[in-house]
Image (cartoon, rainbow, N blue to C red; front, side):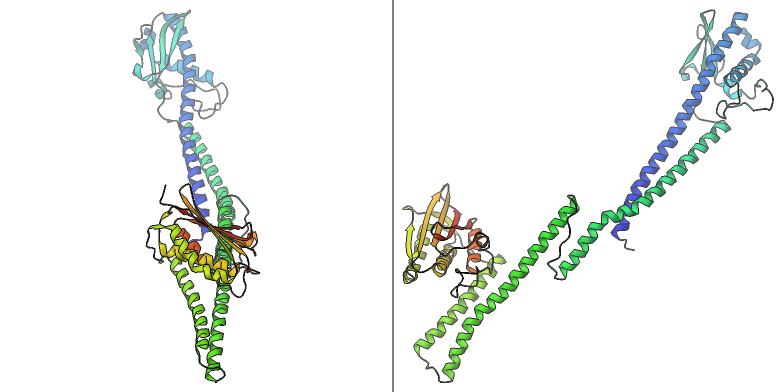
Length: 476
């Protein structure tokens, strides 16, 4: 079964909390066992100090350790007295391991009751020879000196416990572990109660993005998501909004493209249809002039279709480039010579400044000629009659700079940023009926970028547009 992201996050948070709670529970269990065992051993060690004092007093009477062998019950009696002194009032269940509480004064412990405690006791004389007990001295960490009149007469040691065995102590530890388990369960329930709202809060931005993406996929490019944070979700929301804006612009460009292409095709087709119909109806004679008029309109349609084809090839990376070492100044000169007649007909003053030495580039000569022809054609269309066009070619720091500066009319700063967009045409004085479909400069940019160059539109000093092209030169 597929789980929603909310429940996946909830289970992930809950699992993390469960692991933490379980780890804490196990650590507390381990700490309880070890800590309580150390506590019991410490109590017994304190008891050993009192027992050592009593043994010192008994030793002072007999002046030797033979009393232990002669009267084995003496050590048990002394142990019982030390236990009674350590708990004058009713003791907690873990204070000792073998006493049984009675309504009246407790009787001295019997050897049976103190058997386990006695088995772990080791008494040695002043020369550290064992006199009572069978424990290995190497297993005992601390020995308590037995003194008589300020003189050490022996040593008393106790083998520490390795584990708990008394029923009262085990019951106490079991009760504490049960409390720990209940606390851990309560913490897990609290974590579960907090995790679900937290998971919903974390997933809420993702749900908004998913809903917005669904609207975007259905064509609603004006959809936007609010940016409420600076984390990954905030960055994702900003990227989504940028994507939606880009798609919205592309959709508007596509619609404008359809409108522009329809308009560009409709005008020459309407002229062709009108003139052919006039010839068919006998209103116009079929002459060389009428055929020339039809040919002009066919040429306009063919040029538009060819521009679209070139742009489509460039978009898919299928536009072929045959690069060799070419002379850039020679290619530019040829393009200028082809346009001189048209420029003269429009009374445009042409100024050309070229270097005397060849400018060698590793480039496609045909595509560069297409680039220069488009730029010259662009200036020819959009520059007022009687204006100027300045063309400069120079080499600066290993790069070829080509400048096309024409005179008024110009465009605004915002319009200059869009000149190289596909299908973009400036509304105003630089877009008269003679203008194209807005594909020429887009093709120019593709050609320049295919040669690892840069093309930019600037404001020309004489009031028009300054097209600057930077191409890497083969000469260093």
